[in-house]
Length: 276
Image (cartoon, rainbow, N blue to C red; front, side, top):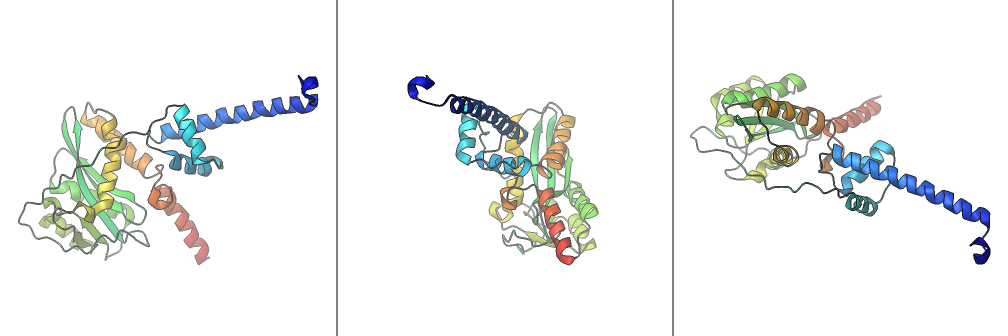
C-alpha cells in the first residue's frame, strides 16, 4: 500500500502509532467524563463537566466534544421537576419588613443568611428540613431535621449556624412569613444575638429565591431519585448530601462552578495574601 501510494513506510508506522495513542486518550477521557457525571449524581451537563475536567485534571476540552461523549455513553441529565412552595403564612403573628429586598449579594461571610423549610417523604411518614444559607458562598451553614414543624426546628437550624460561624451583630436573617419564623420564641433568639429579621412579601417565592433554589436542587438531585424506606435512612442521606456533596463538592454556577467550601477557602487565601 505504501509503495502504490508512494508513502514513506516510517511515516505510515508513525501515523499508526499516533492513531493508537489518540484512541487511548479518548478512552481515558470517556472514563473521566463518565466518572464526573456519576459523581455529580447524574446532574452535570457539559458546562459543569468541562469545568471539573479543568479543575481536577487540568484538561481543556470543548463542550461540543463533551456533549458528543455524553451522547455516545448515553449519559442523560436527570429531568428536573418544578419545586412547589409549601409555606403556611396564615397566622396573626407580627411580620418583619422585607429588608433584604432580593439583594442576594454579600461581599463577606456572615452578612446575610436566608432560610426555609421543606417536606421530605419517607416510608415511615414525613420529615421536615429547615436550612440556613450564607449568601456570601451559598453554603448551608445550619440545618435541622425533625418529625414535626415546631418552632424548635428553625431555632435549632439557626442555632447551629450561629455556633459554627459566630456571626457579628447586624446579620440580616431573611425567611418567608411562616409561623415558625414569626413566632416570639424565634424573635427572642434573634434579639439575643443581635440579628436583624427580614421577611418576604406575602406569596412571593422570588423574595427568597436562594433558599428555594437549594431545596429545588435537593429534591431533583436526591429526594426524587430514590425512595426512603425509613426516616433514619432519609436523615443519613440528607446529611451526606448537605455536608459532603453540596457544601464541599457540588459545582455552583453563581460561584464560578466552585463548591461553597472551595469558594470560601480561595477567597480567604486571597484576603490573607493581600493583608500580608
